[in-house]
Image 1: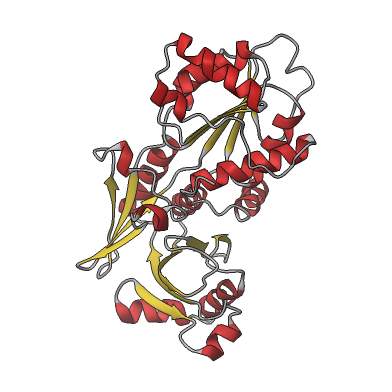
Image 2 (image 1 turned 180 degrees about the vertical axis):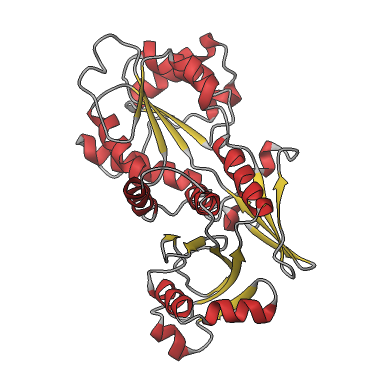
Length: 358
């Protein structure tokens, strides 16, 4: 059985319930299984029309009725909990002898009852995961892979419910980083069904490295935290970090290029130069533009950005590498204040992450 103060664990899970990323859901399931609790795991397999959540989205629920993740705006979750309380879910699972699919929104009446968007339908796979040593081992391995930003899928036998881990580390980077959000753009499915097996691609939490402790970085950090990024603020300049603080943000005075190499070189990472100081920004960019980071950008005017592009070849960067730089950063929305600039920056980062270049 897992240790820890029950009140602290309950408060942590309340915080986790507000987070919908796959990594946080897998971590919650892992914790519940480690505590000896069975867990319901729900995964969206198919959608038609307008749907509130994409294919691959997840919801998990423990024996106490604690939820993490989401399938809709709330009505499907309420329906799920009602069936959980009256025992019909477990009865159906026992009758089926394994995982089963619930089809939501098949009729107009049900769409209205569940408040689904017009024409919206969902097929949701429900699994009842016992806290067996085998299942605990599978979810522990998934957590380890996701926390190390490795490519991994969850494999489910749709007949028996048996679970296993499918590593994607042998695939190429170009084939990787397919999340539920980007799947429609790239053609790679977050969920694959084949001969009685579901393969569910999982996405780790994305990381964002911000360079330069200033007001824009503060607002970008707050928005990125709300969007479930792991955020690090780096500024090696003396005294700049003395009065900079945002809850949930890791702060580092390391050299930017060292930090990029150590933690922000994979396709789940973004690097944003906000220092307005070439000693900080260019030091990070000369390393970041050589990585597989999904986004690398630098704040500055058109003139500043042009001057930067002229300097970067002197740092050993090729034309192709420099061409991947987003500069000036952010969508052109007429932003003037730090908060407005942060909105423009995070909008562009979100678009790039979803496969849209803006």
